[in-house]
Image (cartoon, rainbow, N blue to C red; front, side, top):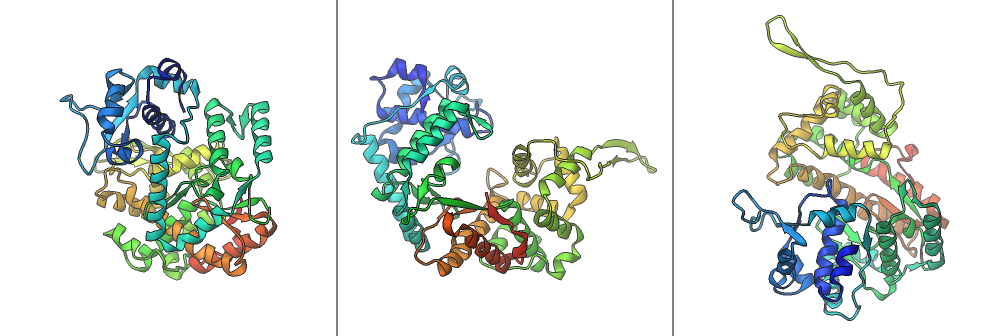
Length: 459
């Protein structure tokens, strides 16, 4: 995916490698919080994709033409720290605006080109590394190799999107159309065993995890059944509850990251008496499991106000108030969910100023929950202070789905195929209801969450 004007101007002049580098910037720009952010790309990884002398042969000509910009510091030197911070690049402002206006086009390199061969070699190396480092993933790789794509169904989805101009709640843009074509091409080649399958030590990323949800619905197992995705509601928050439970059970109040990682495979009871003694944590967990934690947090944020007033000793204090909980969530739930994960759960940079009202309101109602979040952020040595908490919750989530959940499913259906997308399981539609029950019972054994709550359900 590259800007249209760039393709028209430099087609035949730029190499496949240069167009691929621009494609990387476009894709990551679309995923970035703001389009003008610099994209940090490791030269070491780029050389595996684009070949040796990537900096001089591929990137430098783009810099010379002012097509791409490199991040600089005040001293006009490139912002770079060996082993810590990769170089930052972005498209120039005109091309960024073009991408924002959806003026993009697909660029397909020749399957026999040097770039295509390098990318294939890189995929093989990453797959071999994942399977060698994590042998339990072999069954998931074997399952993917047996899946096929229902091409007529995928074509029907595309026609529906084109006619309506929408893909769910989002406009069906050129970017979406290019991504859809790319997903269809990749998922139609599963039996050729040439697809993305990589593990970063915590999470498994495959060609399926990155595909559009609608296109995943076009996958079929070896018996010709389509798949139904069974999703764990509020997964990251659920496994935050596991971390909170462990912090109480083992009195963890420092060295959070290292200590909590020791209990990845530990079964817990989040309704244990010790948890109930911490009233705000117990209340938080009940909201997550039995109610809608996002609606609860919305009420807290919407009703929170503060003002500085003189106290008896002359010291100013904060006054706050909350609205009743009988009002409905008026924001888009998906957008507010992202706000919660960003502002409350995964964005503690030991902030002293400009603290969001959502955080202040949550701290008032759930002080011990916020204390753990702040504690982990203050101890983190990562550039992004939320990284430690993300690793904890993702490690817990990964262990449950890849080990506990799949083991239970394989025990019941040893000859069937499944696939995972981080916090959900793709199960053949003819056994989806039974798989849902099995997964909820597995969750009950692992975390003590009653299976009857059906926290795992059809997405």
